[in-house]
Image (cartoon, rainbow, N blue to C red; front, side):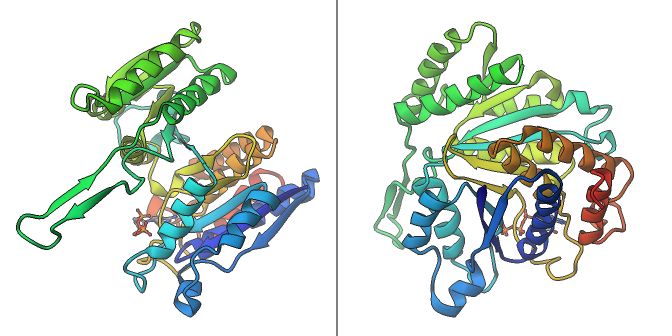
Length: 351
Ligand code: ATP
């Protein structure tokens, strides 16, 4: 049995997550996976109703009762502070120590790529973004706030443990999946303390993996190279801020935000899976949200639960949908959200 906490969240999260559950339930029916879903009433509606974002007892249940968390999107114009999103998503990342933000960047249909002449074989990389440190810990402060002499400090936190475990995770992944190289991106030419640590740890771990080509790029060069020659990249490892930015660049290379899936992982522990896109208030409630990023995220969750073959099958089915233009409007198709899932199920032989 695998117990999955479901937080559909806000906006189109409410539309795509039920589609993901429909897909997972169909696979469960066909393969006897023993998936058990529990929907949690969390998100903007709950916050506006009673002020709850993420109760400590729910966090404790994540730790002790659940194998995975399936999250839609968080963001609502009625909560301008976005406090519920921060408490839920950052709360899970930090308190559950989900130190790997895993972002596959895989082109499934050449027509979806904004770069000229690129084929699926050219864009097939996976980013290991450090997810618990860096510039996103909130360490820092403001001094003389609101005055002309105001000072604002945002400190970047890099620990030996944090840097080492994400770099190790990237090399271990490369080795287990037959990937040939790991690229580490930093800005050690300008950030002499923290990124020097990344440099030193990268060299040590790379030496332990002589069969994997290890190379380094400054993150600005990485951004250029991902556009100029994406075929250079296999596995990329970088810090929290840089990973956030280059993975969105990668999402466009693979065909847009509606196709970008992610996992927030701590191997061997409860982990969280979510489509990369936000709540998209401009299209919410119309039944036109693209569910494919959610389906690909569901696939990543199945790998985490020990069924990598099913992730590959989902990818294959999503690829067929893209090739046959069985897609939503933003990708030039005509299908509604649920019709796209119907097509995915059809390609899996589950309709
Ligand atoms: P947030 O909730 O994080 O503030 P957002 O929803 O405004 O973010 P993105 O997720 O980056 O921002 O999406 C930007 C735009 O892309 C959306 O407003 C929407 O038009 C489109 N979009 C995003 N996800 C999807 C999707 N799954 N299907 C169709 N269009 C999408």
